[in-house]
Image (cartoon, rainbow, N blue to C red; front, side, top):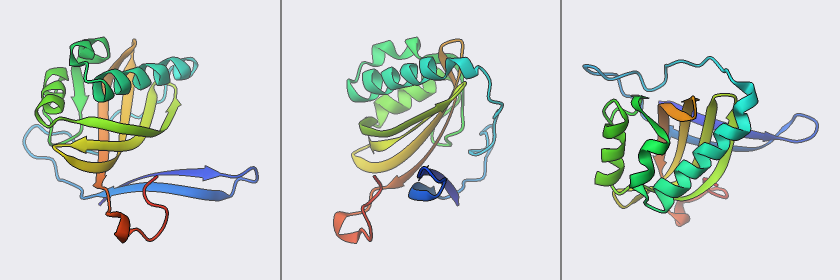
Length: 165
């Protein structure tokens, strides 16, 4: 299993809230990259706000407003992709988004440090609602690497707590 978690702590450092998404781990085949490994060196600490702003615009313009013609403003041509449902490169990611009508209903959290930005929100993929984390690595004002983890949204009657958000 692959689990992606975020926590909120109080002023004493105690965990007071927790969010997660759990999905199956898929063993890489052929030229696929592992869905959890990659370059995790945090750099460009001074660009945190700039990178978060870029990802926020990417999610809003592309996934909420459907402005796919703006895609190349945000994503590097040689994008490294860790989602096994999507091929390598910007064009493959863009084609997946178009083919499966991927949209973001809302972004619940947007976190960043240096050249990494994490979004957590509700997506629609081919008409199915998911809670989804996306991790983006940025360089020179473009998304150069992407990981994600998603879980089908539970039905309201199946919730044992406040739900995914």
